[in-house]
Amino acid sequence: MTVIDKNKPVLVTGASGYVAGWIVKSLLDKGLTVHAAVRNPEARDKLRFLDLLADNAPGTIRYFKSDLLEQGSYDEAMEGCELVYHTASPFTLDVHDPQKDLVDPAKLGTRNVLETANRSHSVKRVVVTSSCAAIYGDNIDAEKVAGGIFTEDIWNTSSSLDHGAYSYSKTLAEKEAWSISEKQSSWDLVVVNPSLVLGPAVNPLAVTSESFRLVRQMGDGTMKAGVPMMGWGVIDVRDLADIHYQAGFVPGAGGRYIASGHNTTYFELVRALHNKFGENYPLPKKELPKWLIWLIGPMLNKALTRRFVTRNIGYKWKGDNSKSIRELHAAYRPLSETMIDMFQQLIDNKII
Image 1: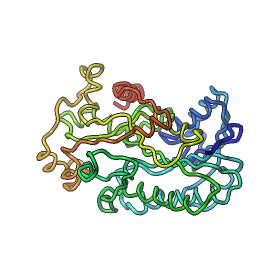
Image 2 (image 1 turned 180 degrees about the vertical axis):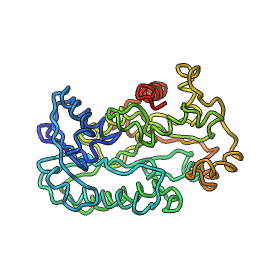
Image 3 (image 1 turned 180 degrees about the horizontal axis):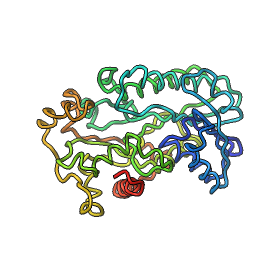
């Protein structure tokens, strides 16, 4: 059982990120002091949204210059902290060098942060933001697990540098975290494994992220012909922030937690937008057959390789979130709320 002193500062790595922004807000709203680790504390325009969060909350924020691949760059930021949230990790599907762009920052960055925790005299718990991508690589993987349901006991064994490099990077990074954790006894490790994260951003600059690109394409005409029949797990970013807070402060929290509010599909995401936005935006109205996506997908998007289409299109996704509900008191909001709020933010920012 680990009890965290809320009078001590809390470190958040990658503090300006999509998920991290909501974690920071949650901590500030509860009156805590946040040590925000960012690449460049001098880039005030990019951090203004965090300043505004702090201005409107009882908590306080301090910025620290840190880099995932720079040894020792988290020492100062971690000083005096009992709790560390490690959220910093690249999320992009458009990469030129998977090893350099994804694997190294994810794995070596995790090693850097956790080795800093090993040197610290104050850290009691580290919460690492992993991903359901560390549990499965392709939807077809569900056919190999009991009941076709992904659980915290399962690891991704189907991704590689050549296929699903992002998922591969998340798998290696999380395994690195557990390896380092098992060799020490001064702090405990809690891992949050979110599915696809959607919902509005507290950082207006984050609306260009991969999650927003996916939703933008639903409304800008890119997908007006239809969407693939593909299963997704989805969680609202606000619910995910709440789960992170609990993962940090619930004394008995431990192990991995699947954070996923809905077992859904691509078309169900779109359908959640139809009533409110269907008349004014070219939202997809049907699912495309797998053979068509297999044929033209690679020409439309290089991420839609024939191997990806074969192993993902036409397969549903189902994850077991019961541990998060039972131990972290997770509450998941309706999918329609997530999609409508996110789509509206894209409209308000004149992105669609």
